[in-house]
Image 1 (tube, helix red, strand yellow):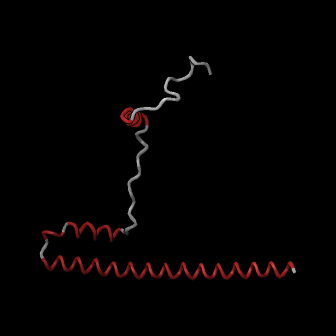
Image 2 (tube, helix red, strand yellow):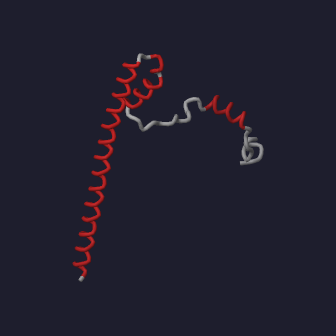
Image 3 (cartoon, one colour):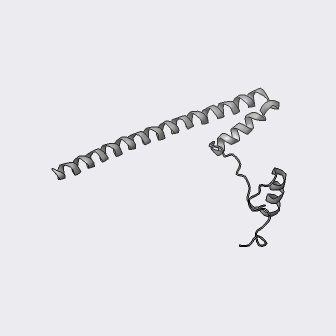
Length: 109
């Protein structure tokens, strides 16, 4: 490609301001992904409720906090179950792969 055909911006950097302007003009459908939360929908709802409960009566606040605590206990139990299940699977896979290697080595003898 001759110099007359080469775009003027090749090999040059854009200013930050110009970059944002070009991005807004030509790449509107491409957006930066927002941070994701690993909270379940109920945890997110509880978080929002607790943040807004300043003006609620004391008995309603206690009820909401109790509901949040009950849910967190359930979440902890589920998490422990998943962690235990994963560890059991890892041990079984490790044991099965060890047996497979032993059988392969026995056939070589």
